[in-house]
Amino acid sequence: MIKIAVLVSGSGSNLQALIDANLSGQIVGVISNKPEAYALARAQKAGIQTAVIEHKQYPNREAFDDVMHQKLLDWDVDLVVLAGFMRILSEKFVKAWEGKMVNIHPSLLPNYKGMHTHQRVLNTGDTLHGCTVHYVTAELDAGQALAQGVLKVSHQDTTHTLAQRVHILEHLIYPQVVEWICTGMIQHTAAGVMYRGELMQEPVQFCKF
Ligand code: GRF
Image (cartoon, rainbow, N blue to C red):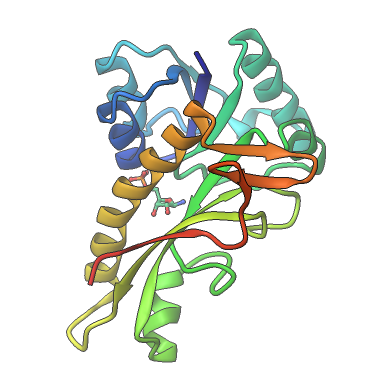
């Protein structure tokens, strides 16, 4: 059984969706860089061990990442799932977990990498928006996209409604993609990402208009 660690910084609604999905893999631990993250309470309620590793207590990014890396090794983790983890990871850490670490980002990548995606979508007047699950590489929000949840932006949408609507899609697609990895339906190989035994050309799309 695949052993999963989830890295969080905040409310952890995606963590909750992963817990509720009863995955084929086992969530063996949750790491937060913030002691006040509500995600920690969700993990504890589900009987999952937690670790708080505060980035502020380390002299630099590499030192912080080294401690996280060691914790993941201690837990014998196969797959790292970033779920609202608000720290940029060092190249060394990302390399160590390449092909074994996924993230969810609230935009249709490659559009709107980085922060404030909902506001930027509204400013541009885009008609479609959503979220993307992708492998993590050293370049921010640039690893291969595995799945996207797509929604139509309405004239009434605000950053608040968009955030809510995108969250609903996140909770649908993230557990699904993690389950595909757990069951081997998605595989990271030297030749590329395989989906159902074939090279994945583009992300699986889920739509919710
Ligand atoms: C989500 O919007 C996700 O796309 C982004 O961080 C947020 C985490 O939300 N990476 P939550 O903590 O899972 O509720």
